[in-house]
Image (cartoon, rainbow, N blue to C red):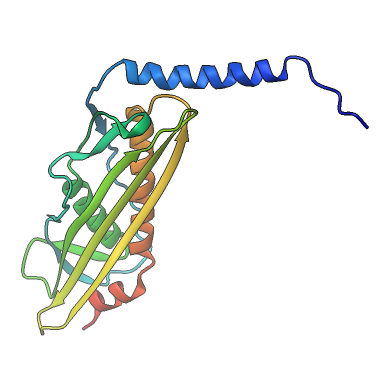
Length: 207
């Protein structure tokens, strides 16, 4: 059987491609511009456990190699062309510190500033956004990595690493709201991994 050609199908496909390419190029044509992203306060699930102990949680330390302060990446166009820096408020070290404290409170721990039987410190080794582009769309890729170390007064130590990654595909210019959504998803995933780590909780609660 001879296939029946669909009149105008090639024209429609070409128009769809042209429209997507136009959207992409319009974003590039606007020129490089930095974007300021406001992150929502981190909220862990309500505490469901009885009081399990007291923990001192230090401020997370900045340990990223490719960024510092509020910077978390850059928006890019076709060919990886930089279209401006991405910065977040609050700072990555501030919001990950809040995340650690909130998750431990949710597990029944009381947070102390000093003189607790257990102490938790962490290094932020990754907190970034990448926006690779094609002729049809952008992928907004977020990733966070936190190295955590717990110590007790008797000298015992426990170390672990938590990682989270998430992606959102968009056919429009990756703006502040979409970037905030991706980073928010990464933080929720990071929090769930900490929450699910019974080994850390057990170490902090040990007598």
